[in-house]
Length: 127
Image (cartoon, rainbow, N blue to C red; front, side, top):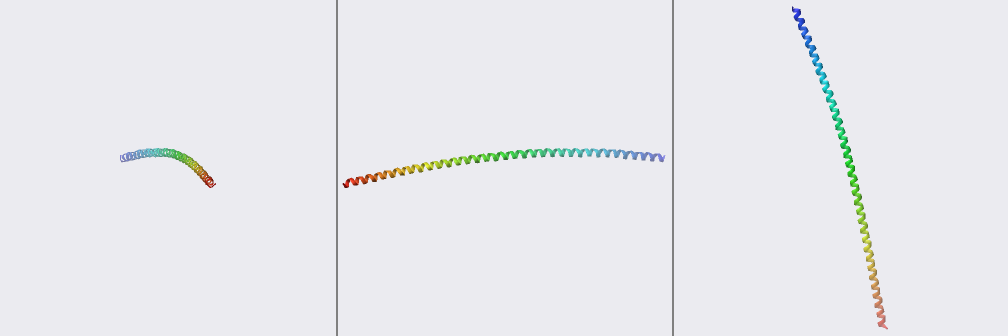
């Protein structure tokens, strides 16, 4: 009977260890699946984040290009206005100088006439 009890005890021990190994294997497989899922989720999240970053980088580059274009257009418009103002100022200065020269010429002619008339009057009085 002792042998039977020992045999039964041995069978029970082998059965428990077999069950325990099966549970350990199942838990290890579950842990492996969890690691695989976590890795896959991390890869997908990294891909999404990289795509978002790339999209934001492209958008930012487009914004910079638009801002540079706007600044260049504004600078060109300001240059054009400055050139027009300079041309108008030059035109006004030339017109004023011309008017001043004409006035000075007319004044010289008037003074020459007056001097000539005065000289003629003196000559007439002297005869």
